[in-house]
Length: 429
Image (cartoon, rainbow, N blue to C red; front, side, top):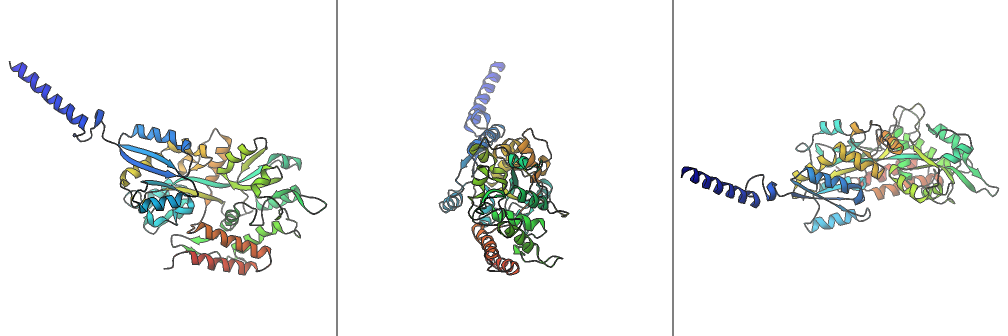
């Protein structure tokens, strides 16, 4: 009798426990013994297929995280985000392109020191990403970096017996001059390098920025957002003046460095046609170039550096994570960031996008893909500067180049005027 009572009691308890498990009444339990997943909606401009496999894996290993990804157009991400916030329907996590990380930083949580400390940030991520650090605040966590690279046409270089691309700007001058072909009418038929103008040189702002950064001028000081473009150096000219003069001389017919004119198609199109030896573009452009002209014999390498310079610098775009202040699940969103920053995640996603991980520990690892190996290596050297309004700063840099090319201003006046215009784009204390 006692045995039967005991069996009945056990059956009742087991039934009750089963009911609680299936109903989710027990802490840590739910249907089939798992707690309902916390939904985290991630927005970004990267193709869904580049992240889908990793997100599926994360959702499988983390039973409490329901991570999903929504691909957005680069042209509409900002508008879509602001409209969603106004409706109370914003995402929990955003992969921020560099154009938005500073412009919309007040819309995102300060992650320091609760989620991440400055010490952890500096120990984890590659040099150059420190521009994301504010005064006692971290509103964005680095994810992937897109270094500016030098693409070079192997066939054109071989025809002039150049076995290697230039490693310094002096070497670029020499090689580009020899590779440039001018017909009897004075038109450039083959260009050594696309530099000198703002109208048909893609990434003119980034190239000029790289020259200035290589010379040691940060353009805008962080974390105070103070433009210092006209800051003098030990020489009689500022780094920005020297960079501006050097850049614009490639478009002057009277100079030996003349390699580019306003009559050329844009630099990308000219390179794809096989009529441009050296083309500055971001690593992320590699898949598009290969797809558009699979027969073009080209490679990519590090941009030239200043001969004898103290600092090797490549301009780099930083894609980072931000958690909107309106997110309903900030803790779960940061857990998603941690998963996406795991080595397996980064090494799965970065090569698909022709980008490099922002974690310094991964950049020294050898890659089976020879293009990825170059991109990873170059990511160590990235530097950039914080832009509150990328469209406006492009206009400022374009005006600076145009004023020199047209002879409207001296380099000194062009740089000083540009600094004043930059100052107007940043909030005043």
